[in-house]
Length: 296
Image (cartoon, rainbow, N blue to C red; front, side, top):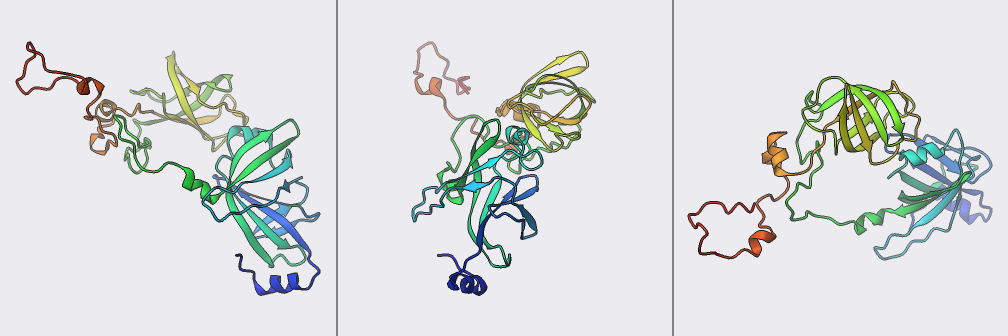
């Protein structure tokens, strides 16, 4: 049950309701966008909800179970609000969205109907359709750790402890060439002693400033480093833009120890007995002097 403020409750009881839906979209980079199905702008929590967005929402469903109750919102691709380029480039991935019911004659009379995350986005040439997943979707995700050889931490996070801002782990430079949206050549300062594969490309200037991309593969060619990205760049990156590239990690204990000297923070189980150990059996000619069997 929603708690309504007395003024909104009195307004609803009057029998003449002047209500509108408002959506506030908060991206991970701090940008907040507001939309409404009313025909005039509505100021809500410091965000101007624009009427000319073409936003239209389906019914709101909410059940008593832990299942995720999803809603869909459709809208028109607008050049100055939500662009196809931003959608493709992932600027809205994981964004939070709030659905409000507002008295458009007095925007202080509001009720928050639901909060959620942006889910699957479908688009065509002129419009888009986005799924709003409820907060309970987090309960559907697997939690805990996996008993495995490799490390389950992300390079540079709190569990890993590696400082990616160190000069030996990150390199600044510029984009030297772009063969395709997923193939980028960068000219960075210094010579990395590790591969950028499984690392990250961070764009620091230009239209794509603030965007980060995971690196799939890395090869050196002359003074340039060729990077193959997991996802394409569609946000206007061009030759000359400033970038920072960080090294990657293959999650093995050897790399953690020899490349990062971070073996004390390794989050895997490198000495876990494998299949070879399980199916092994004693042999008469085998040495049994207590040394390692070489299976780990």
